[in-house]
Length: 591
Image (cartoon, rainbow, N blue to C red; front, side, top):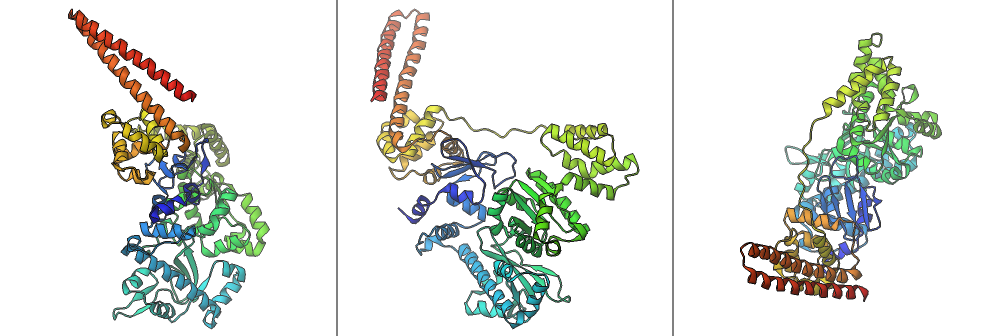
């Protein structure tokens, strides 16, 4: 067994995918379902088959084995995926060129440089040059525990300490250029990208440092917050600060708390709310919302109370609603941001506020009252149409939608009938016929059962496959899969090995078969395959009987009576053969 197969045989796909997607068991056949992480959906169409060790989304078509999943979800190359899963599971990985490539080496070097950078920045914070940053943290009441927990650091002002350290490690110039950690001058010399800043390491979901956020310590240094540029390991639109620490807490609490900044995350985290995350210096994106939805169905938005924070929260609401998540808005008293509120009022007060956060509808209504002329009926209706209608019409349940609309009508002082008319009008405008996605051919039960048995057992495959002539499967919908099994010459027929030999159409049929709830145990596969072969043989005999009967009818119409009598005798013999087949099958089942 080569290393790839050895690694896969030691992994449980449900456990691996379960780190990224909340999975629920569906039936008793080793199948689990959840929301697809590769496209936006509100109803789970993502299926993971534990017995066959593969996944399939029946919404977007994404499918594959555990290696392909990690490659896609983490944006890794194949060698990087092998390395990541081997390290996570304590499996030694052979040092062979086939398990490396230029892209993997570049990304690996960048990750290594970021780990070194995190260490350098932490050393700087503890040293004399970090006094100003330490004073700032003390002023913000960031404890030593939180400083250590979040691996905070300091990039010293000269802009040379990190480059010197990386130069000592002899990283190639092309790796330095791609890292985002240093910059090159026109004369070819390098300097540190971050200088004189309090440093916040940004991790990917696996806990690897992939970027940094830096807060200036002096007013003259602008911008106030500087973030790493995008690199081969960092795409800011899909990364959330603190996700690697928060995801387990998000699942336990059933919610995510979204704040705006790094300091807000640390402040809320220190209050005992571990399920807190923030975007990394950018506006919230749909990709980030989908990441959150993989771990929780509920979200509490706790942005800064200023105008910019309100506008950002309004945009975030739409993204969460589109994703089908339940949203609440936490508006803190006194114009305080989350970190300030925790410091001034204590952890208990913040958690109480969090648990009593209101619905986003009334928060939007309050913004509408402040933005529109509520003294006139036209102004009130305009407020509802512009700000509230898009959110209300996203509520899937018709009765809940009507109840919320009625409540908001009273809150805004609008006639409820007018609100309901607006909802009906909006619903009618949205009803655009959608083309159904083309469906592939259904796999007949006999083909599905036989293939499932042959895939399940190498013993059954070795014994039964030679007994199935190519002519018997020539008219099968799944003929290409049978041909691929024959061409594997008795080797392992795992999902990945078989899938790789098929064209896209046949691959979809394989997914359809393996995703079925009827999982064949290896101990039962041989008998199941035998039963299928008997059924195929019976079907062949029945086909010959039907063909002869048609020929008899034609012969009788043309007065060819002797020929008809001969064919009738053939039918009788075939029917006797069918009886013997059934008796043999009954005996086999009894045995």
